[in-house]
Image (cartoon, rainbow, N blue to C red; front, side, top):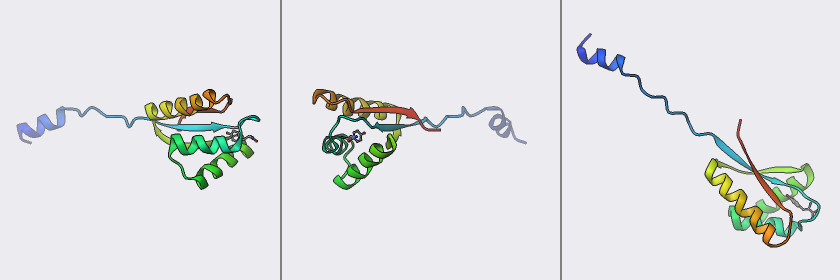
Amino acid sequence: MSDLDVIRKTVTKPKLERPKLYKVILVNDDYTPRDFVIFVLKAVFSLSEETGYRLMMTAHKLGTCVIVVCARDIAETKATEATDLAKEAGFPLMFTTEPEE
Ligand code: TYC
């Protein structure tokens, strides 16, 4: 074994952990109009009318729906932006984030 091989075997590579991904979750409520939910999904998450409608109806029927999975800072920014947009319009619409398993 050469000196170089010894050095290669001795130097340990720092293990870079893959950053955790976060889900942005749409939460159902009894007050926000369906059309407004779709408007927010289109404006903040760049979704089409069809996808917005489908995800809104999933949250409406099941209680929650995952909208997107992405890096933590992006997930938190989008969730805040979407929730604030609804608050400004006087609706209790909520988006939350949680780490993916
Ligand atoms: N449940 C609301 C209604 O019937 C619509 C709605 C859907 C609100 C999804 C929030 O995340 C939501 N007007």
